[in-house]
Amino acid sequence: MNIRRNLSLVVGLIITLVLIAAATFFLVRYAVRYYQVTRDLAAEQGRLDQLNRRSPFPNEENIRRLEENSAKLDSAFRKLVSELSRNQYEPPPIEPARFPQELRRMNERLRALAQTGGVTLPAAFAYGFDRYFKGELPRKDEVPRLLTQLNAVESVCRALFEAGIGEVAKIERQTFEQATASSPAGETGAMGSYVALREAVGSSRDGLSGEEGRDTSGLFAWERVAVEFVTKEAGLWAALNGLARLPAFVAVSSITVTNETPRPPLKTPAREGETPAGIVRGPVAPVAPMARMTPAEAEMGIPFGATGTGQKQPVTREERIVAGRDEVLRVRIQADVLRFLKTAQAEP
Image (tube, rainbow, N blue to C red; front, top):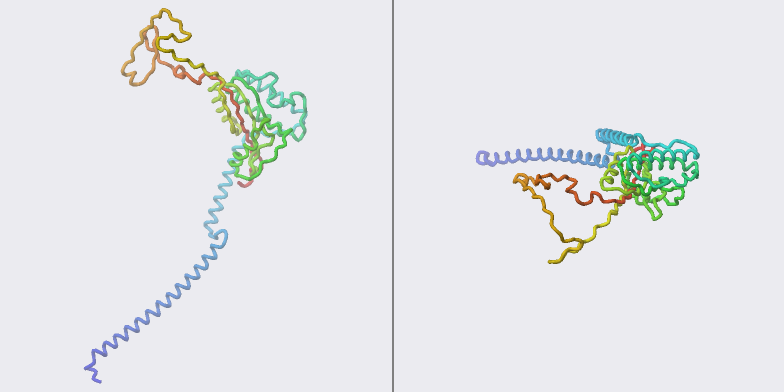
């Protein structure tokens, strides 16, 4: 074999062998690296699946933040309950024989307040405690709730009397001494249970139900007081604002307003050429000339009247209101006086 003649072939063969060796080296190297990466990935995936199956996820930072948020939420909840329970009425431990005395004291305070506000009360008004005004004594286990109802009635009446309503027709409380209603079923959230339960503990045909309203989670309870009174529109708004300003947490669960002012009779328009009924023909008195409105006043829309001298007089706001100002309204309000229980200090 002549090497010189086949030198190019030999050189090409050598280069080919070198390239094959280099390719084989890199192939083996990348194969080993791929195997290692695949093995590590499988190990990490298995570890991740193991962590995800745990409850909670064992991340130290997440656990620390969760504990901090839980502590802040618990602190905010306790602070809110403490604020809502501030100056809350708690019935003192008294004997049944002292309850009529407490009732008479409340009656004296409210009658003095009614006289100051010009509120008319029915004769021998008992505020829903008629049997105890007649000398009947409650049972010992009924005294705490009766005192709570007494405080609720006084709080609601105080707000209404200070608002200057015209006349009180009736006051009802939840007469639990004769109540046989069962507790409403089902569980809801804290404030959601109040909305759901207040209908179940609401009015019946014979008056208010005697079942005490109580939140299913044990946070709060409420006593319902129904007051029927006669007033005008301004007195109604003042009464609602007064209930909202009470130190106790009061929610108006129902309100019914009836306009007792009779409607004016409809007038039949007179036909052409006829004299309307009730109008007597006679000499017409001279009418004072009416002053003209200046362009500036017309642009501003200022209403005005005219006097006998022709001088312009501005019309007051009360004179512009021609309907609803002096109408007599009969209103029935059902107010729930909430009290937050001592068990509310538990976890929310």
